[in-house]
Image (tube, rainbow, N blue to C red; front, side, top):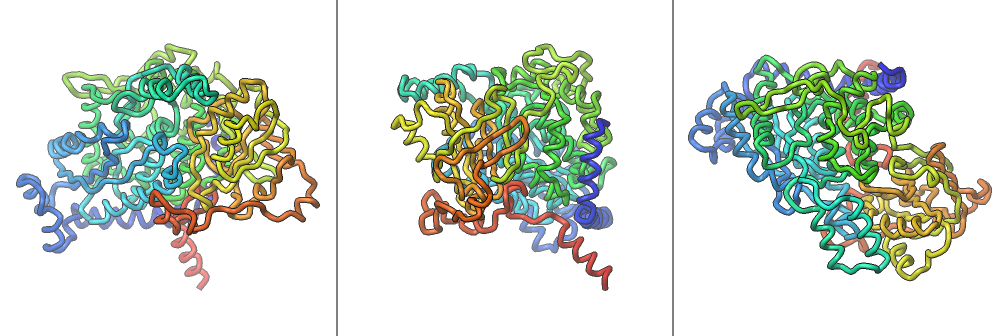
Length: 624
């Protein structure tokens, strides 16, 4: 193993030892109970069980009455508004048939919400987006809470959906869980053309019809959006964690191979149950090594900054205490191996054609940057994921890929990486801690020192741009009261086009915010996820108009250049919206989430570290 990867893993393991041990003890006790009793539903009383199969067809009803065949839950984020999730409409029937053929019985256990950040950008609904991860986790738990199931199939692709599903599944860690992707839509309008049209619209040089036409040609059919944002970063990380079947991630929807992989996922879920020969509980799959592997994959691909929070929250659900310090250390050691928009002009289909996950994983394994000895849904060892599925007689067969990348503009070997580090830097200084995605930022823009322009809402900045108030000057835009405790930490991606316009005009500009900029953040230097946030008394609330700020993404520093003695005399300016003001679009329903949300560097989660309470109780018991 690369020494940095091993050191980080060792520290993570030691730090997490009490909570992880408590989590695993509970998981293994539940697994042992399951072995003794048979399928989970066999412990239900007759009235409970009758409710559980009342609506089943006759064949399934017979199986569910019995105590032989394992039960498999299907949990889906299907809706027909989101292109990424629309393909899931047909999956339950396919999965039920596959599970039945494999000797199990599947039921659609529950649906989870799936909102689209692309639709809600700049709208009030975006302020519910991050909170939806917690809702999805809780909805997943509700789906699995009926004690009817011995394994689960999770159907989700995008942004908060996959982290929410996985967090929920990890609270049922004794159950095997297979994630079933839907794949990306085909390539549409080139990303460079789309981005240019957005900037022209921001400058008033094209109208709404031209912009809408460009967007419709980019997002044009069922499947995941093809740029490398949070949705596709999800998929890469889930495969590297061993929760997809090998090579399943970027197979397009409505193809024969896609359907064959879906059937194979259903069969595999049955094989992984405690009653089979290959028991693989999700809580054992997601261990410290798998978490580090996911971080490495994120960094090596220049993935979404959102995952600097999601992976922390996922780890916590498995009793693992991941810190931003760990990501910072890993980023120094992991080279950038891919160029996908917004870090380049290729999309995920081009990445797949160049060799995709098999080449990426193989390169990282050979360089000692991924842990090889891990448990996956395909079996023990990440080497399973060097193989890609091909169709033979209508079913997938996995063949190891011998050749490397076929397009070095998109995917490179470790020996010829695009850059020596992973494209996501952690920043720290007297303003707090922040995240900066540098893989799409030109080297000459990595360092900026300029006066602050302070805004308490992204719309204020957009209005200033439209009024010409930002023209001809260098500045650092400070957008505060955008954190999880203030308003749900919305993505501020609407800021990218106007700020990119100013950058292209030769102005030196950057963004500092306690909000998010998403996986689609591009060429504008930005320090995001600033923690502590303004609403929790973070120093960003002390920034005044004209204060000089120095953002050095290369060195990893973020400084407010104001003497400490002066800062000590300042009081916070601005304020988050009150509950009475934070209404509309259902936001008032989430007031409790605002008050419970943790800081960004702790995953912005309302959930505690899983196993922490048990480990404290155990320690107290030993003391007595």
